[in-house]
Image (cartoon, rainbow, N blue to C red; front, side, top):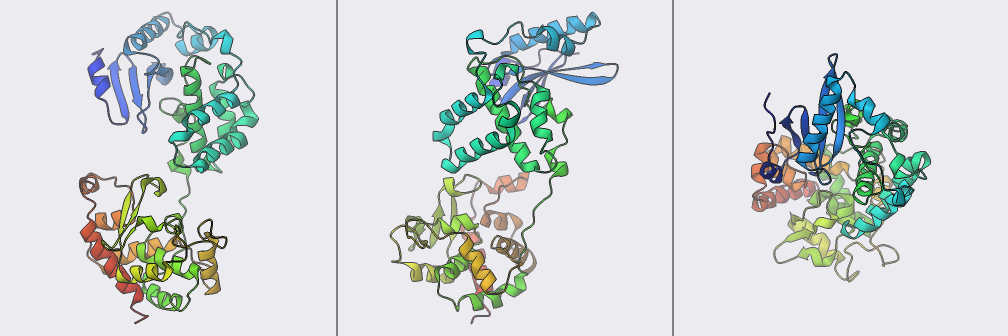
Length: 399
């Protein structure tokens, strides 16, 4: 069996998530966010076992190999190294710093949020972190020293919501992992991260994708959009204007409602949305058709910043305003987000535009190799034609 297959140079060049073997049962797991950790994989009586050896930021490859050597020595003596780790910390050779051993999980979470808050998109992200931890993690181990948090303790919090609130639970697990990694770097704890997924919790919990129920937003059949849009244009209130703009641009509710005049280029006929307001975090340019520009001109002058100002004029229109328009028109089974589905199905069934062009118009992340190739260009001119044809479809009944 080949060993020492990984080199310092190769480790420095890793840029993709995956599992990279060094030999002798040692692997480096690289997550989607490129965080990496060492894992020792071994078998006893045909049953696979995994031991986390620490993140690569704290444990270098030489140290990881030495830990594997010690684990192999225990196996040769007939001792399960995982049991030895739990009872004597033989794999670590260290304990948490006594001076910081009483730092609680809640305290570490607060420190982590404070340290990273400035790099997050907005205050809501920090609030989501704090609220999820307070609601789902703190009742189980919030007051517990991070040096004493183990896998069974983390599992208690996750199992309680893993099957019923899967997306929330998955995000919570990632946040717990980040906080505990932070605690390790700060010297508040030692050892493997009990919230790590790769090679650890994935053996104890079902993958979220296996149990997650996909939420489909009720949408209007694309062949009914034209008639609906004609009726919508009879209204001149801001909610109706915002809904019309959202439909014509195939944008998300928040993207439309938080649109600012500084993002609109009338001469270039384009709406440039900054990355911090996009779901995928990337700037997005939306071609504007004649009908879309017409809505913008009707809104011009109502507010110096917001295109669709709210009642108090200090903030944009509330998202419920567009839902109220739908309810007023007797469409309680249709959602605003559902019009993106209407657009997508229309493009697939009534046009010859490539799928990649449609996906870019919806600002979806590209996943296949072909779509990745398209990322070199945003296909703006093709999307301009697509949005022009969509606008024609929407206003057909009106004319």
